[in-house]
Length: 119
Image 1 (tube, helix red, strand yellow):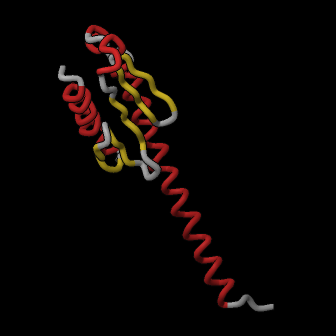
Image 2 (cartoon, one colour):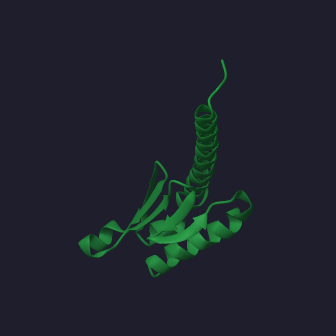
Image 3 (cartoon, helix red, strand yellow):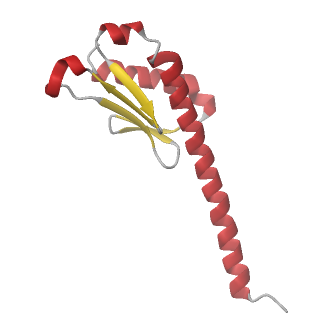
């Protein structure tokens, strides 16, 4: 039995989609690991953030900052990993995460935190 051209085309499309999905998941997982590491190594240990009354929590690709003492008038900051491995801070896209840019990305996140809370 020979395989139809339609079946060949659909099999090729399915294989391409599977590769693209695996690559997307890999990028997202790497960006989530970076953000979690940033939280664990830098944010969670920061004495200065505590002094300024800023609290942070990390969950499922999201890093949320807030200043509870400021009440309802204080806007929090959310840093999230998007579906394709991009990192967004306060609604501003910092682009896709790449391991070679880890230090530069960390610096950008620190700048966003400082600017957002006027530290």
